[in-house]
Length: 228
Ligand SMILES: *[C@@H]1O[C@H](CO)[C@@H](O)[C@H](O)[C@H]1NC(C)=O
Ligand SMILES: *[C@@H]1O[C@H](CO)[C@@H](O)[C@H](O)[C@H]1NC(C)=O
Ligand SMILES: *[C@@H]1O[C@H](CO)[C@@H](O)[C@H](O)[C@H]1NC(C)=O
Ligand SMILES: *[C@@H]1O[C@H](CO)[C@@H](O)[C@H](O)[C@H]1NC(C)=O
Ligand SMILES: *[C@@H]1O[C@H](CO)[C@@H](O)[C@H](O)[C@H]1NC(C)=O
Image (cartoon, rainbow, N blue to C red):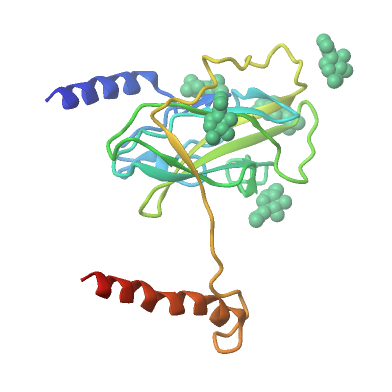
């Protein structure tokens, strides 16, 4: 009873905040489910159903802070987060043609519950994508992707214009707009290659890689039998 009351209060607070990317800004409220977006706007690639905007915000040419609230949707307490940049005006909405330039390695967030949860997280110094060079006045779009447990993704974007880091139009990064809530944990993501592209199982390194597993499996099970 008490916890459901608390959840309602938390939900009301979240709903009144109306933001997902909290720094440096976002394209607009896409936490909407209606006739046009019966499954919810935020699932739409590339920017959660909102086309390119012209009320851009400013972001440093040297890279800078990105803060957002990942806990708006029910059904998953953990998710993978990707932060990408799009450049150019070749897209259908005259924005970027794609959002394929990764800014940080993907990482996992660990929320407290499967229900919507409060909390903000902030990466204080996100660099530009590798090999991307910009100058003050250039435009770009930053995309935050939240890959849910079932494989679908939530998208949110902010359209930016690059400025020098000492530009007075930059919103100052402070402990109030860039912080990590204790609600949200983090984990690194690792992959383990079990078979490289082009390798056959019979002759490739994969078979050798699997062998250690195959040989210790009986040991584990054997040990369990002994315990029984
Ligand atoms: C742009 O305008 C929309 C609609 O008023 C607003 O929701 C959004 O926060 C604005 N974006 C920025 C970066 O100011
Ligand atoms: C950047 O975007 C703004 C507003 O959308 C536009 O007025 C400006 O011409 C663009 N700048 C460049 C260099 O394309
Ligand atoms: C993404 O867009 C950029 C800029 O238009 C382009 O150079 C690049 O080839 C595109 N990448 C992919 C994977 O489509
Ligand atoms: C801001 O930085 C630029 C380049 O680093 C420099 O040329 C300019 O003088 C600086 N402006 C101010 C107001 O400090
Ligand atoms: C928030 O946590 C992430 C992941 O551990 C870390 O990279 C980042 O620097 C933290 N942000 C702040 C404002 O301390």
